[in-house]
Length: 336
Length: 241
Ligand SMILES: Nc1ncnc2c1ncn2[C@@H]1O[C@H](COP(=O)(O)OP(=O)(O)O)[C@@H](O)[C@H]1O
Ligand SMILES: [Mg+2]
Image: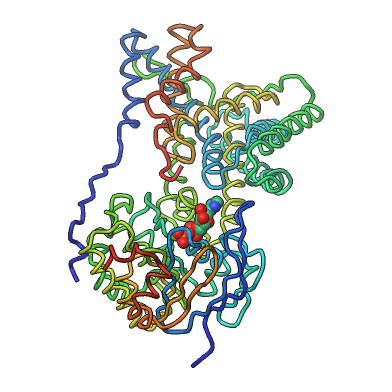
């Protein structure tokens, strides 16, 4: 019965590496423009660190959209909540934070990260049940109600913590930089890159090596068929929603420390950035979201140095350029 | 004769404000291959989707293996033993052939002996085991979609136009595969436009028109009666003979 192989085309579609090359090309292109090696290194590392944090915040959003077609404009709220968890969690841990020992700092930092993820994960569960579930399949209502949720949570944060900026000093051992030849590498940025890479690798591992991850990817492509195979897509979705919220919370904490301050307006700011990033990446694509985050952050840093006025529009300009080239983003999800 | 595995009684289905199925009645007996034929737009796909719970039945009842399933959710219908091969195939193109089958096998890793049995008539699946399903040819995708439905034993297979758009040589091979699956004892409800295929694999037949069943009987009887074919299915059949 080998007749079935008759006319069988050999697989010709190759993995598409062009988007992966874009951040590298951008960095190389920026080098002669920036001129100095040490400045370029600093900007590039700052861009990578920023990109990793944005990726952590945006990765959940792209999966939530991919899986259930849900436009969650409230995602930024979890970023803000994560930032305030940092304020609350570090308050009683002053001694550990001020210790010059990195180990002591991490003993404060790691529990705070876990707490931020737990708090925002639970908040994500409540948010999904209360606001998102009643408006499945209704985009306009989703946008309005989730944006409303963002405003309510922001106002609750103002009411609880006051409208002022809450200073958030970096742990002692993570201040300053490590000299590397002529360049200086800021320690906290290195940490942000490490944390971002861990998040990316953990997500990639889950999505490619576990049955749960395969189900999520299959669900992004064709949720109906996943149900026809006997799996409950809504249960899958709420898990993804909670995990995405937890990652947003982690990103929020990291971002607040990077800025050394927490403020509820971070939620609205990051909402715009994360949406740009997931559109650039291709809605539903985690890999695209990763590359989009790094591209956007690198460009923001180079532009901020080379032409500060251009930097104001660099995010939007990047999105327009990518969409002109690939209208559905860097890695369009097949069935969309 | 044992009781039917699947029974539809007076099933109506609305899609949005369109009334598509107007009281569909038929039985699918155990261990046989039942054909669901009818012109384009007769409501065959809608019937399969309604059985699967992908469209809600607005009236009537559907019984499967002794239980009423017309109000059940799709995942529950699937886990009660119904497998679905949609018209669109709906393979997960971003996943490998293997990963597609891993998801279809709910009880754990796919059974080796069953895989060998499947590779016997779908050799391309072994060959492209670790390739992304999106890179397969149309015929191979159809094989994968059917393989997903039989990777574990299911009580009922719903298969929607598996030969659509395939080259004649591949269609012949697919017929042999379907017969082999039927010989394994499976109960199949098969939608098909190609009358040659229907004639070859069907034991029983139901013909639909405008959202209703207009003829039920043995496939051999319909195959032998040219004028009945013409009346029920129109002239388009000649092109398949
Ligand atoms: N999603 C839909 N929305 C509106 N009408 C539909 C939809 N799907 C099918 N129909 C209509 O229902 C009728 C039956 O379609 P279908 O079940 O796909 O027929 P068949 O599979 O027999 O060719 C057709 O008239 C078709 O136009
Ligand atoms: Mg059809």
